[in-house]
Image 1: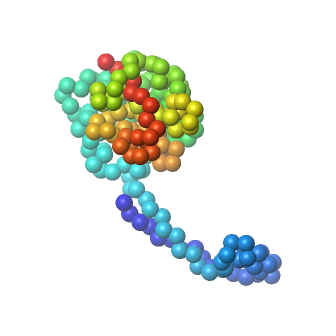
Image 2: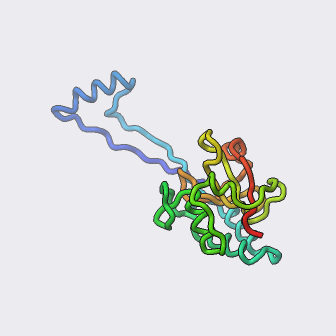
Image 3: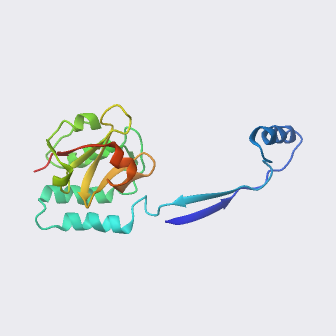
Length: 188
């Protein structure tokens, strides 16, 4: 991870700005005319580390991996860095279910458009039995399945994150571990 430091410019006092500054100072407990230093932490590569990419490449390089799963993972890798856009289905912006639906449309498998409906397709399997290309589902809204990704290997999955876009995360991360619901096998 790389840390970027930015500094805001000092505010100038104008004829009408001074009363506003004084009000802000009193309300927010500080002088807004002073310089403010902010630290921004950025995970380089659209939130995906090189080791996560390498795990993805090893997964689709497995000789025993069926051709459809290999194609699915190769195509998924090419989407890393695509921004998140609600209801999006293109490289200009995509949401989680749109990402999965679009990738599967290149295969002879049509999936429903939303994650809750996608969670009813295929066969339910345990996480221990998951292989590259299986779908992983999460309850991020508190109202049942609301997020989907594609399992890679070693507890990693690729998905369209609302904050980062298409990226790779671990199922062991607390956020996803607490919200994990199921794994479904759509491809044989």
